[in-house]
Length: 345
Image 1 (cartoon, helix red, strand yellow):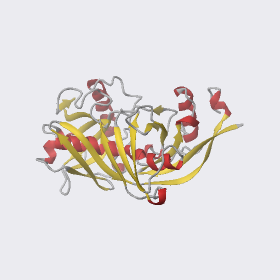
Image 2 (image 1 turned 180 degrees about the vertical axis):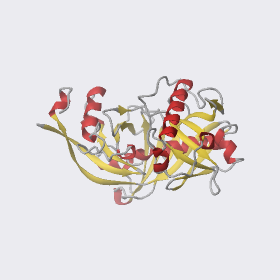
Image 3 (image 1 turned 45 degrees about the vertical axis):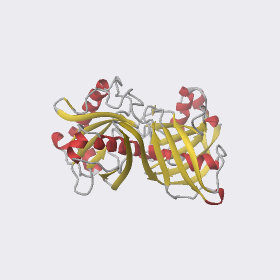
Image 4 (image 1 turned 30 degrees about the vertical axis):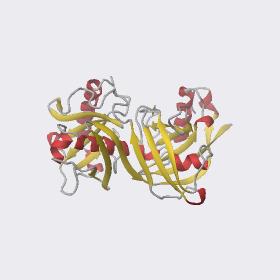
């Protein structure tokens, strides 16, 4: 026997994964996570027994529900399911998956669409950030793959308590220049050249350098302690980012998830990097030089990511990005009966 749970598989930004209504999943977090592990086929390198795509970018889940507070229309919980082990992490946030929340919620009847464009306020439960989504809805219907404008607020210190958790805008970790910043997601910015790495190298080449990957993980664990996040070996935050100069952008960046190199750049990572570029004294600002412009361009493996970031004195007023999302299929994922009894076949 298997239990059928409704879901919609979506490509959202550069990520992909199933979108669920919270009411269709178990309320108990432990049972819910077991269901997500089974749904994605986590714990097997190929994820052949589930919906996952054998990479962190394609092993993500969005859980959406009506808002519990008066400042939003929807609540959104992001879950990162590990491709190679039976683990679920709800500590990070994912802005790419967020792009699909509006179209999914309209199709699922969680919010009503307006003719032309629908504005939806979303409270991210992972970090507490409030995001405004503007979704194209001609004839009251989400337009597949049309640009979705996202404006993020309340993004500083969502996990670690403050924008620069250690109190410093630039410091060293085991001799390596770094910036620790918590903006949309906790990030560890590292000088690529100090690690002997090329910030413009292909992601596959960085992953193949096992000594480099091990060094980055060691620094990430040190950063977790310094940021007040504790022991982070079983968590995906903070996310490490190798940075360096760029000829046509503020920075060249390589973002890690953290055990794999991102083939592009996460939305939340781009926001944190843009904030670091705009705020003086950081490692990113040192590479970028004077950068008074509101829009920050970041060179990544698949192109250039542009973030609009508005400052209010020393504080961040909002950050804006544009992404697209497209439903791939709607249906029901089948969960084995063994999951409900606490074991898996």
